[in-house]
Image (cartoon, rainbow, N blue to C red):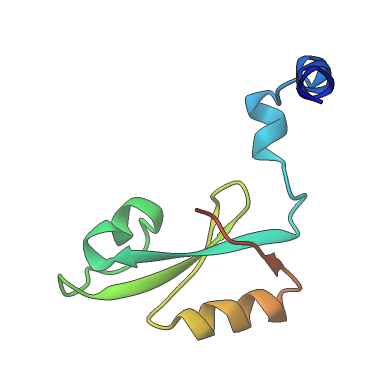
Length: 90
């Protein structure tokens, strides 16, 4: 059985960076906790926020920022409204 797995593993071609960036085709997203100190990096247009806040970012599968909120439920609801399937990222 190990030999069969090795054969399959050897025939799989890794994704290029461009292929990986387009993974999900605009239909997948994930919610990520983010501190207010890190908001400017993902959302440069956002106003300055009080330090120490725990927020949630809704991001496209390629990491594109979609929404920033103070509630995980609000981020998930927004994904649903935009017909995005949310996936877990570990």
